[in-house]
Image 1 (cartoon, rainbow, N blue to C red):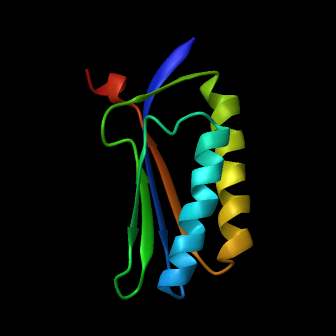
Image 2: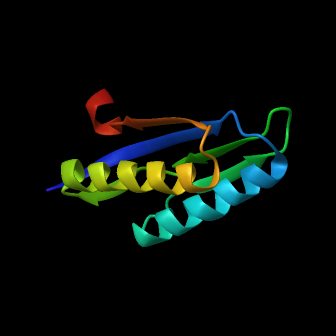
Length: 101
C-alpha cells in the first residue's frame, strides 16, 4: 500500500557556508539513492548561521512500505549529515496530507 507524505528537513547549527554546501551534496546523494529527487526541493542558506532545507513543497511524496522506507531514509540522512557536519542539528518531520481530508 502506498502513502502520501510530506517531508520537512532542516539542518541547522552549521559551522560555515562551506559546511552547508557539503551537507547539501551529501543530502543530494541520499535523496537520489532513495529515488525522491523529483519530489523534493533543496535549499542552502548562507546566512549567519548557515542552514539547509529539504522539503516536498511541490506535492506529496508517494511511498510504498513507508515504515521500512522511512526508517532507512532517516538513518541514511543521519549518517550522511554526521559525516560532513558532526555538530549539526537535524530536524526531520513527516506530515500526512491525507489525514487532513
